[in-house]
Length: 439
Length: 173
Image (cartoon, rainbow over all chains, first blue to last red; front, top):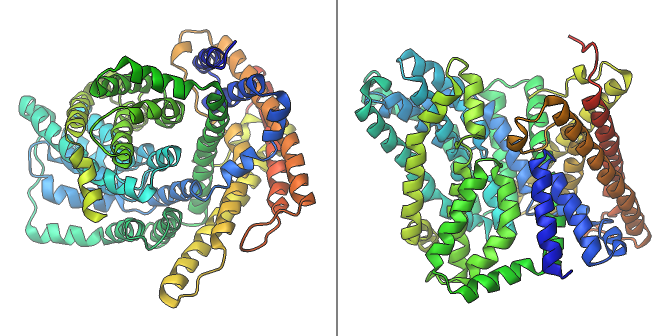
C-alpha cells in the first residue's frame, strides 16, 4: 500500500474508533503510533516515544495553556460575574429583552478574563438566570442567550483554542488575539440584535427591566474596574510586546487569583478547587495535543496533506467554494465533536489546502483570517444539537427548562452567528483591520 | 470541580489510587501556581528594575511539562477525557461499558509503553548530560516525576477498566 492509502485507511479506522466512544486523544495516539510504525518502522516509533511527549509538553508556547486555564478558574471565583452583569444591566436592562442583553454583555465581559466557553456560560448563568426568571423571561430565551453568550468566552481573547491554532499554523499568538477582538465585539453586538429582533416578534418572551440613572450606570462601571485592569494589563502587555503570551497568562492568573482572594473571598478550599479544575482541563487538552502530535507525525509520512492540497489546486475550484465546503464540514463535525479536537484533527489537512488557494490575501493575513473564521464556526458547535456542550451546561443549571426549549432558544443566536461568518468572509478587513493598524 | 470522589473505589485499591492521583494533581497545581508567581516577579523585575529572573522561561517550560504529566492520572480517574457518545446513544448500557473498559485497557497499554520509553529517554538525558540552555538544569530531573506519573496513569487506566466492568457494589455515601 502507498502512504496515501495507509493514511486513508488509518483515518477511517480512527473515526470509527472515535464513534465507538474511544477518547479522542487516545484514538489519535493509537492510530498515529500504529501508522507511524507501519510507514516508518517500529524501531523508529520506539525511539520517537522516548522524548516526543516531553518536548511537546515542555514547549514554551504551550505553557500558556495551563496558565490561561488557571486564570479562567480563578476568574470563576473572583466574584466579578455579578458586577459585570449589573454593569451591563444598567445600560441595557430597560430595553425590551434587556435582561437577556445584559446577560450577553456580562458574558462578553467575563470572556475578557476567561478563555473557556463552558466556564463563561456556567459562571454567568449563576447570576443571570435568577434575574431572567424574576422578570418572567421565557425559558427558551433565558437559557438560549446564556448558552450562546458563553461562546463569547472563547472568541474574546484570551482564548485557549486560538493559541493552539496559532501554534499549529505557526502564526503569532499576539496577532491572533488582536484579530479576534473586533469579531468578538461584533459577536456580542450580533447577539444583542438577535435578542432585539426576537422580542419584537415575541414580546412576552423578554419584558423590559427597570430603568437606571446615569449615576447608577457610572457606579456600576466603577465596580468592574478590576476586570478592565486585568484585561488591559494582560492583552495590552501581549499586544504591546511588553511580555510574551505565556508571561501574560501568568500575569492574568496572578491577577484573577488575587481578585479571587480579596474580592471573591476565596479560601484554601477554593484554591484547591481551582487547581483541580485547571488540572483536569489541562490534562484533557494535552492528551489530545499529544495524540494530535503523534497523528500528525504519521500524517506527514503519508503525504496526505500535500496530496490533498495539490488535488484541490488541480481541480481549480473557486476559493470561496472550497472555504464554504470546509466551513460546512466544521458545522457538521461540531454537532458531535468538541472544538479543540476538531481544530487539531482538521487544520493539518485543511490549512495547506486553504494556503494554496487565492483569496487575494498575503499568506500571513490568510492564516489569521481563516483562523478566526474557523474558530467561530467550530464554536457554533457548542450550541448546535444534538451535542451542544454549552446548552448541556446551562440546562443542568436551569433544571426546569426542557432541553428542547433551550435548543429552540439558541436558534436566533445561531442565525446571528451564520450572518456574522458570512460578513467576516466577505470583508476580511474587519478581521485584519486592527492588525494592520497596529503593525 | 472537586477532587476525585473516593466513591469510585469503596475498595482499598481505589482509595490508594485516588489518594495518589489527587496528590499528584495537587503537586502539579502547586508547581503551576509557583510558576505564575515566579513569572510575575520576573516580569515586574524586568520592567521596573531591569532585573529579570534569568532563565525563568526554562523553569516555566519544564515546570509546566511536569505539571501537565502529573495531571494525567487524575483526569483519567475522574473520567475527564473527551469522547463522542452521539453514535452509541442507542447501544445498550452494558455494551457501552464494555467499550469504555476496552478503551481504558488500550490507554493503559499506551501509557505503559510511553512510560517504558520515557524511562529510557530520561536515562539518555542523564547519560548525555543534557541541560537547559540558560540555567544548566539537567533535563533528566524532569523525567523522574514524569515517568512516575505516566506509570501511575497506566495503573489508573487499568483500574478504571476494571471498575467500569465491575462497578463498586456499595459505593460510600
